[in-house]
Image (cartoon, rainbow, N blue to C red; front, side, top):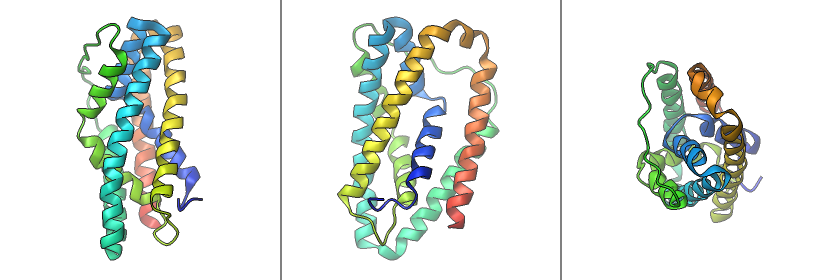
Length: 203
């Protein structure tokens, strides 16, 4: 499909990544707590805009490797698989600790959501490792393939964010009283990441 080797697995992997606790999720929840539905959605749009910037920066690097060094593309895929497995291991072995607080100011939800995302340079490395694993080097269509992948990430992120904003408004107090739920999600995401890494390495 549009040069994507396994679209279903790609969409599933994006969903799993969104579940991993991080600055974006924290900003989304905090913005919703302070600004309600509008604050949460504004922050979501900021995160999505910044994600697209980072994704296309990563795509430029992936496309360069694909065009100039076709023989090295499989090596990049192996590195990506190893990175996923390592990330999953880190989640599984993470120690309980306080999450760094993010100071969200009222009426600046979009801008702050974007800045929080852009200030995370690891995202570019992540996308560089992630995208190549789902690109079919014999059928890829260049910008079309990456455009479909970027659009898929944006749509899934929007749906996920709407769900998070809604749940935050309804279940905020319950989640704060039960941090074990967050830890369970983190461990589950770790298992899935290791599984994706092993599956893609075996292809």
